[in-house]
Length: 415
Image 1 (cartoon, rainbow, N blue to C red):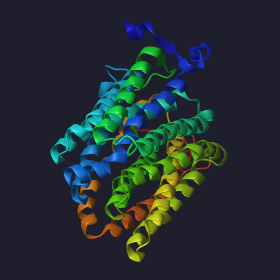
Image 2 (image 1 turned 90 degrees about the vertical axis):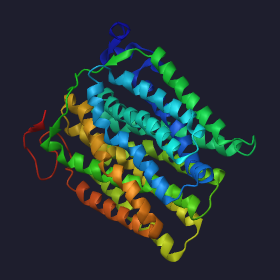
Image 3 (image 1 turned 180 degrees about the vertical axis):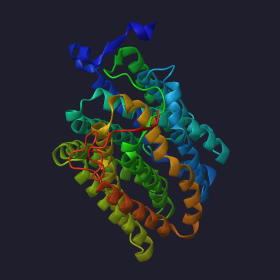
């Protein structure tokens, strides 16, 4: 009854104060998620090495477990039969906050796998419906710019989390439990506020409540797969290398994350305007070309024994190129049937995580013998993504999804 009484069509939200509109809720959720996730990321590598004696093998398995909920994100479609997307997003944030808060209570391999699985369910299910809500609530013409600002808000929240860790870690002699707990509680508080302060928004296009696969989305699916495989190598091994190879402590590694997200906070809105001006094709070609070069340089760290300063610069560059990836979202928004957005977001998230389930564990064993080979593999994936991005037309739309499929009608494979 509560949700029925508070359903509000998007067309009626213009009369609301800005702090109760859909875009503000998207920004609020964009801030809540990285407060927990960024803190977890900043402390994880040092925590698992110091508290549980992790090597590349254990960290690979941990990230494999972390990606299982992403692979099962297609289950969101079933949950949406009984729960609205907005509600699911906020419940997922609550789960992420709770799991982050109690992370330090389980300083063992088995304990960390369990708590990581729980936090990952919250993170991945939130990200799945959050992407869907962005594409439903933001009009196509404004999407690149608005999503760029939302990315900047998330980067700002990450920057705040990292800054507080750097400033207070030694000053107040903090421990892992205190920081994990504080970050998780802030995310929980924001999620509870969002549940109470905002009405339930109703998008103009009802969403399909069953799995949908369409031939005309094939390039989007394939780019999602390559993006997930490539990103896993960066997420799992780039920061781990900074601790294992160069011995960076919590403050130094967090400072590196701060620089990364400070740059992203300023560049994301600019990237949004570039996508609107130059189109998804050109921006994705630039992203994948840059990532290919960066991953090759990562491999060279082990050949030429470059200093940690070079590795840190590559880390920042890598993250900046990754920040262009929301061009894949806006590409899909332009070619999609509006009713396909929610189910396709779930399908795409699962596709994005197919490689994520086995790559971290498998590459963990390769990492032990040849770290540079891991980065060479990532460079090859980035180059394949570059070739795929060349298939995007200059003006994508239904019937003009790729340069080799103009005018072809959409045919559902599964619906």
